Image (cartoon, rainbow, N blue to C red; front, side, top):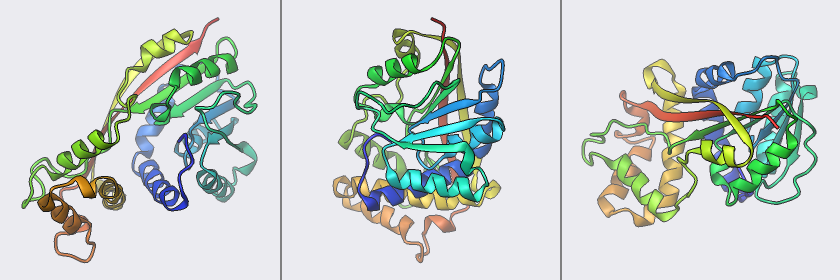
Length: 276
């Protein structure tokens, strides 16, 4: 994250981040295992850490490492520290509040690995941040960028039965209303322009059925609630009513009563090294 939101939005976003981390844990572990590292990193910086999905995946992957988690949200960092304490990993985690769009970042040390997952596309000036990372890393250091093409999808394309295609229409309205110019960008050329050598790129396809993970339903519910908050006023009445029926957890058409939910999304990973 880059700009601290108000408390209510902060808490809702934290819930989504926690559920995303839970549902996608195996995929995140695959990404950390794929990174081209000759020796395990000892000092890691997690840029735009949120509530710690990447931080804890990296701590699990590299048991000797220490992570500096950077985020603009005090609430997210507090939640991350609480998780670290609960895991007995408080001594391995440092949290630093910072807005990555600002110049003059706080001192983040000299890391072996910098990790930025689903955070760079929020920046107004990502080129500035990439150059800052290049300066921070020593020669040979690695920068791992993980980005998503768009918001996860949960419903089949022909659902719900009374308003087929509702989810795509909601996202189309939301994308038009709040365009994020760097979401879905090809970060390879931007990394090269900042002085990095891109050593690898991997596209990770996610398809997790609710039958295989009970957290998928909760993830779908809180995610579509967030979508509704953004697009309700712009939806046609029929779509708004259908979305409300899905989000009514006591109603017969609640999204939690559906047996056809799945998390469908893609992540792309770039591994970039400072070579000079």
